Image (cartoon, rainbow, N blue to C red; front, side, top):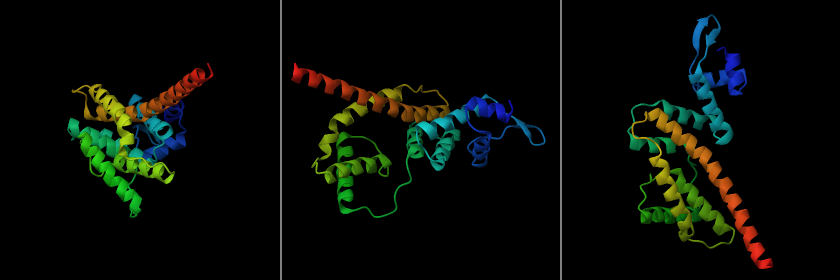
Length: 212
C-alpha cells in the first residue's frame, strides 16, 4: 500500500508517519521507484502500536523508542523480558537529591518490598512511585505507613501472577514484550475504570443502607 493509504488505515497523518520513520520507530517501506515505497501489514501494526503507546499510554517519544527497541531485541531470556519491558515503560529517573521525607519513604518502601519477598530491581521506578505516593499522603496530613499498601499489594500480586501465566512459554521475545507492554498500558486503564465504577457502586450501597 502507498503511504497515504497506510496513514488512512492507521488514522495517522502522513507527516507524522514520516516523523516516526526519521525517529527510527517505523521501518522504511520497500522502495518501488524514486521517492515511492510500498508498505505492508507489519508497518500498519507498528503504527497502531505506536498510537496506542502515545494516546492510551501517554508515552513520550523517548519512551516509545525504548519500547520499540525492546520489542525488536532478540537476545534476551524470557525472565529478562519482564525487566526489559519495565525499563522501557519507566520515566527517566530524577537527578536531583530528594528531600528528607522522600528518602525516608523510599527506605520504608524498600523494606516493604523485601518483607513481601518480591524480586524487584533496586532502581525500579515503581519503588520511587510508591514512595512518592506515601509522601503525598503524609503531606496531606494522613500519617500512613506502608501497611496501607497491603490490600493493594495482595490484589496486584494475584493479577500479576495471572498476567505472567497468560504469555505462552514458546512465544517469540518481541511478541512477548509487545503483549506485556500493551497489556500493562491498556489493562491499567481497565483496572482504574473498574475501580472507579466499583467505588461508585459501593458508595451507593452504603447510602441506600443509611437511608433505608
